Structures are given as C-alpha cells and as structure tokens.
Amino acid sequence: MQQPYCNTCKRFLADRFVEGVCPYEECKYESARGDQCENCGKLLNATELKDPKCRTCHSTPRIRDTNHLFLDLPLLRDKLEEYINNMSVAGSWSQNAIQATNAWLKEGLKPRCITRDLKWRVPVPHEGFEEKVFYVWFDAPIGYPSITACYTSDWDKWKNPENVELFQFMGKDNVPFHTVMFPSTLLGTGENWTLMKTISVTEYLNYEAGKFSKSKGIGVFGSDAKDTNIPVEVWRYYLLTNRPEVSDTLFTWADLQAKLNSELLNNLGNFINRVLSFVAKPPGQGYGSIIPDAIGAESHALTKTLAEKVGTCVEQYVEAMEKVKLKQG
Image (tube, rainbow, N blue to C red):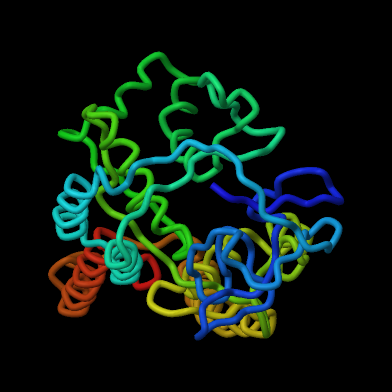
C-alpha cells in the first residue's frame, strides 16, 4: 500500500500524525486526521487527505510504497452480515449504531490494513514483518480476552456465547470497530467466541462552544473534575442526565451549576432536609428522632397510592435500564 512519509522526520507517519482537509465535499473540515475526520465522523486513509501536513514539523509528506498485512473483510461478508442482522435485533442496537454499521456495508467492505510502520506498540510475529506493529484498532479489542488472560488461566471463558450476554458502550466514532472490524476478526478465527450482543452508542458531548479535544487542551477531563472538589455524585448526576443518547448534547459550566442548584440542592436536598429536620424536632413539633409505629399504615389509602406510584416508577426504571436508556433510567 502507499503511505505518507516525512522526509524531515525520516519516518512513515502514523495516521494521527497527518492532518489535512477532509476529502468529502459536504465536509471539507480543515483539521481532519489521517484515520478519521472528527467533524463528519467518516473513516479515512491518510493518503485521501487534501493538502496533508506532518503534525510534528508541518512539512508536506510524500507518498511511498510499503508492505502491510490486511484483514480480508470481503471474504467474511456473509458471516458478518448474518451476525449483524441477527444480533442488532436480538440486542436492540441503538439506531445510531445500526446506521453507522449499515453505512459501512453499503459502501462495500474492503480489505482493512491491520499493521503500521511504527517503532512502538505490539510487534507482528510474522516473517518479513518484524519491523511492523499492529494497528491500534486491530489490537485494542483483542485486549478484552488478552487482559483477562493476564488475570486468570480461565480467560477462554470468553468463548461462552450460550451463557453470556455481552454489552458494550461506545462513542459513535468507534462503532465500526466494534460492529464490523472486531466481530470479523473473531468470526475469521472459526472459534466459538462470545460476540457482542448489545451496543449502546452515544452521540457527542460537546464542550461550551466547541468539541472536546485532549490534544488541543479543550474541555474538562478527569483530573480537572477532581481538582474542582465538586462531589463525584454531582458529576455522575449531571453527565447521566446530559448523556447524548439520541443527539449531541452540550457541557457548560453554567448548566452544571444550574442543575446542581435547582435540581439537587433546591428540589432533592431541600426535600430531604425538611423531612429529617421534622423527624428530629422534639415531640409536639416533630418525632423526637424516633418515628412511631403507624397501626394499619399498609392499608391506608395514601400508602396504597404511593406504593402504586413507586411500583410503576420501578417498572419503568428497570425497562429503561434493560434497553440501556441510562438517561431515561
């Protein structure tokens, strides 16, 4: 295949070290990476970028021939389509996962390169390819069983599809690797692997006026959240109520503050505080911190009504969680 080579840096450039204009007319994003455009989400090859630049030295790379190993996706198409058709229904895949997967199938499966010209990552144990390493998206999902093997000799329980339902949670840009690439790798072995049943895919959580970007230092990340000293439960509540399950959502500090003050403090916190304060007040004003027995409480009309409401909410919660609608749950 052909790959960008930087004469200044004296090396083939990994996908993330090439930046240029997205080749798709409807996009033309000017900071697309060599493997994927973060604006339109389409997967790319570095050689497809227009006006490519080396991200290290900003010079224009030239194209050179290099030998690599490929996963023969066309050869696996029938088995893959059977898996997708069956499991997308049985596992109630989210609509965005189905759309992203079908887009790959519609464009036609092509052999996918699984090696790279890099000095680090997992070396390829194959004659003639000693200087190559595995591509991260071929190698990383294999980490599910291989990391398990570092922990227990029973790692091959990953081959247990009759008794295991495997759920996976992804951002929408990682869908094809888990619905096309990795299932094809497993199916290609001819062994009885546990394949993913349900995939829950989120759209993008954007930051203030733009996108989160670790490389550009835009956004708030784990260490930043910790440094705010905002309790972890507040972060969990805000991120779950703002989970981008159907469409992109926006993280803003003002919205976080508003939800904390209005929903958690004013509504939930105030309710709990009033109940506990009343219970703690001395007899005559409250219960003196001891809640008395209430004879016949279970048959009281108000208790029955409350029980019915709570029961309905629990049923709705369980149904939402079973369908992986965490925001609704």
